[in-house]
Image (cartoon, rainbow, N blue to C red; front, side, top):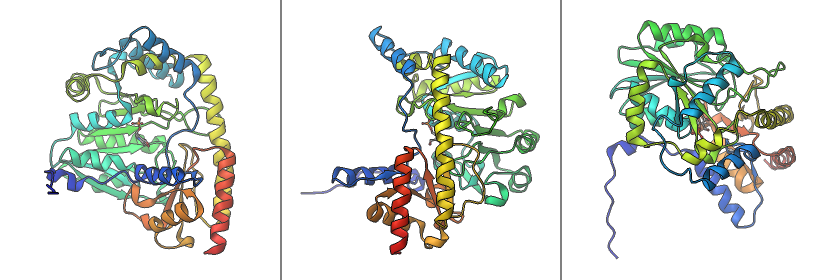
Length: 395
Ligand SMILES: Cc1ncc(COP(=O)(O)O)c(C=O)c1O
């Protein structure tokens, strides 16, 4: 048999795999071989999509709503989202600025696609959401990572942005609450970052995918960057996490009016339109019935965080800050060894516990960190903790 090598673009040498997806595949293979795995690796809610959304999706299919929509999305959904921003955050945004996307992933790529030119640079935190680095590289840009630790609340600051900014810098990417650390970017700091970015005529991309999953006592979501009403801010949102719709592939972005046409052109070419049945389903996402279900889910996430955090601390994982949101705990695992990638492999194969190594999120102290996702039931988390204890005793 002759083997030929398929031609691969030079660009691909710069794109790293999304390790957590690979880890999930490994865990699923073990499960197929009969092993039971506690899943704390994957960043997707284990809760089902709320029934009103599912019914609306089924109805859309039954009624034959299966053709393309406008590239910017269904007008009635854009309006419903603008109304949601008003109800939830008292922010007044025109539906014209709301663009429906195939998940936050497409929103991030579109945001970068219309603002970043080849060889320009984007500032982001390390650790941070891994795909952002790859999106920038895919577009021929360069990434400037700023190392952030507990002292920085695992978030960028205006001072750090100012110091890092170079002639070729185009903008800054932040997420609040963030993945993998779950911390919020304090609103005052966000304001200051926006000032730095605006003064240099750059773009600030604020990923608010976890905004509805924060655990303040007031139950009120953190302020959105949209309240700054800045022509330099693009916000990214999704139905994936808060609305438990990961597989529906639907999100939205809010862009300055001047960018709408540019995003439209790029979206037409890249995606034609977001999924039509998913958009009809999402029309039911903001009903009182759905929001009540989602509030119950949020409470359960909070309970899980409040269970897992002290348990991990007792097991000598250091988590200096109580994360305010998302569904992750980013833990220093130094006391368990100095190679978190190896540790995560051992935990998977020897303890049946899947967690993500820090290397997925950057290079700063990645060998001494693991990310635990509490996207599984309390019972599973308890089992996971028991298995971690047993594994530790054998170390
Ligand atoms: C911070 C952040 N942004 C974006 C995404 C992508 O989400 P979506 O499913 O909406 O494409 C994720 C997924 O984990 C994420 O954690």
